[in-house]
Length: 194
Image (cartoon, one colour):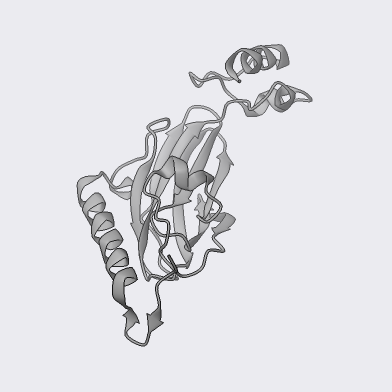
């Protein structure tokens, strides 16, 4: 099936109904799911749904406090093609954008799937311990608005090699406890990674 055709009045035909369906589903999710900007984001609580407006707009602030190093992950969802400038504590830490065309073919509502799908804007950003505020600025959206997901997790070592040469200082175990030395980090990584 080909993507939607664009006319001066917008999207037409079957594809227009699909986009309308995705917008209705997204709006229903926004109304039924807790929005991350309404309350602090819990470290390790999984994905939180958020909505966003046109290019140049920003999301509400997502706030959290981490006892150890953490990672903030963001993904676009539903219709690919959006992009964000990620700001942590008022500083732009990176842009994530999609190179997908302006069609809404191949919608993905599952944030875990969207995060691994190259058609969707997604990225992860490390932060240190303490209180943080994350704001997303919309830098691309072919649809004028949309939805995405954000989560904050403890930063555990991805491999034993990541612990070497002082790297152990940048990670915590799955309970949020900092490692006391390189050996503790290597041991944890060897026993907790596939």
